[in-house]
Structures are given as C-alpha cells and as structure tokens.
Amino acid sequence: MVKMYKNKRGWIKIVEVSIVVLLIVSTLLIVLNQRPVNSEEENFQIYLEINFMLKKIQINQTLRKEILEAPSLPIKWDYFDTLYNLGGVKETVIRITPPYLNCKAQLTEVDGEYEPEENLKQDFYVQSIIIAANYEKYSPRKLILSCYKI
Image (tube, rainbow, N blue to C red; front, top):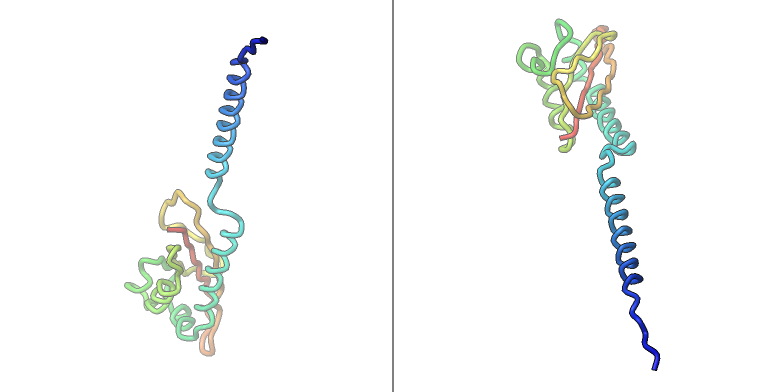
C-alpha cells in the first residue's frame, strides 16, 4: 500500500494567494470610490442650470427694469432687497434655484469682477450675463450668479 503525504504547503500557498488577491481588490475598490465626486458631466449640468436661471431673469421685463434702475454698483446679495429695489430678482433666484444648489447674485458694472462673499472650501460655479437696456433706459449691468452644491 502506498502512503500519500498531504502537501500542506500547497494549501497554505493557495490561501496566501487568495488573501493577497482579496487585499488588492479591496484596495482598488476603496481608491476608486474616493475619486472626486464632481465629474465633468455633473459640472456641465450645474452650469446649464445656472445659465437657465440667468436667461430666465434676462427675459423677464420686470426683473430687467429692477436691475437697470439700481442706483449704485456693485450690489452684494445681502443688500438686494434691503437697500436696493431688487427684491424681485432675489425672490426669483431663490425660487428657481434647484434644491441641491445654494446660489447668490451680485450686480456690477459690465467690466466688474466677481467678489466672493464667503471663503468657501468647496467648488463653486460662477456665470454672468449682461443686461444692457429695456425700452426706456440704456444702462449696462452685469448680473453674476455664483452657486455651490449643498
């Protein structure tokens, strides 16, 4: 009768290789899940939303009139409805902002620059549109809308 020896070293090698493969796969999965959340498609979608909001304000004659009649520039978001008669613009921005964004506006001269009101440590998206005239008045202004994800 032939005695068969159990090759315990072989089984140990198989278990070792299996554990190494599991470690490598789990490490890859962790690294892939920690990639940046903002993909290009998501950024593009947010910019489309901001442009839609700006166009909606631009084509509304009442809001255009409010913007063109604002006395002094630049105007920060906090003063839209308190010191200046821009309550309609502020209400419209708040009403049409998607629930996943927080948006604020500024009104400046056409060549004015955006001045962030907060020191955000996250990505924020800024778009602007020029509102130059209505039937009664020519007074070019730039409405800047800045948003960040909640």
